[in-house]
Image (cartoon, rainbow, N blue to C red; front, side, top):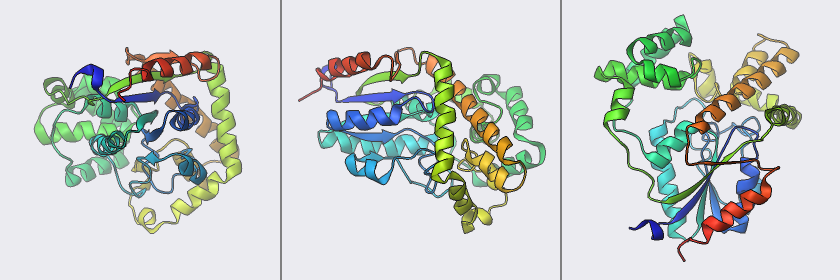
Amino acid sequence: MSAGVRPCAIALMGPTASGKSALALEWAQRFDGEIVSVDSALVYRGLDIGAAKPTAAERALVAHHMLDLRDPWQTYSAAEFAHDARAAIDDIVSRGKLPILAGGTGLYFRALLRGLAPMPEADPQLRAQLAAQAQARGWDALHSELAAVDPQAAARIHPTDAQRIQRALEVWCASGRSISDWQRDHRGKPLPLRVLKLALAPVDRAQLHARIEHRFDAMLDEGFLDEVRRLRALPGLQSHPHPLELPAVRAVGYRQAWEYLSGDTDADAFRDRAIFATRQLAKRQLTWLRGELDARWLDTIAQRDELDAAARLFLRQRPA
């Protein structure tokens, strides 16, 4: 199929609290689209307030995909996401709708748009061994081990990103080859759509920090701590030997709330730590976005006219 007749999609990428969800909801209504979430926290049931999951009213306005796919004691890989999201996109396109991909999880975007290299499948026994090592020694120690066998992967994976550290070491232990070697030697299959990539970020970093703080306080007012109390009471989490190592519980805000409810911090320290962790997440997201050289950077507030113009121009070439 030639590039001129490929279906269109819009990717709204950006740090947390940058206005992606609100813009996706507005454009989906305006351009007859449906939203595909590209967010690693939103795939988990029960992570609603703290993950800024679309409300029932918002989902009634526009169809949303890739939400509530796993229980919080389960895991969900980038490969699984890419497979499921592509199926959702195929369905959206088949009905003549516009897929709007919105989120801030860079690994999910990379897996979806570029495809992933084939590599060893997950090994539950090996994964459990690595989790036990991390529990005993800390993820920093395992990150150092990764740096020794795969310095490229260690350079791009944050020392607190347990899921990616675990996966990289798992691939090394299972195959004797680094995950960087696998990714370099085997290219994935790109998404067969024409995609407008928009990086949404405030021009002034201080504005983003203010939005993050305001949004977190609003989450507290909406009952975020009660949400985490309900999660802690779930049998699947109560019976898990290391709940703080689960991707869902390690989501920004949730880990800090979990520790607060365990009595490890006081209320002020909890709020400060959660906001700081969210700012650090935004920093990592912005760093990843700078590597997306074909993305256009725009501010959802200060450059709103340019955003609308970019979408209209792109969709003029949309197949009828």
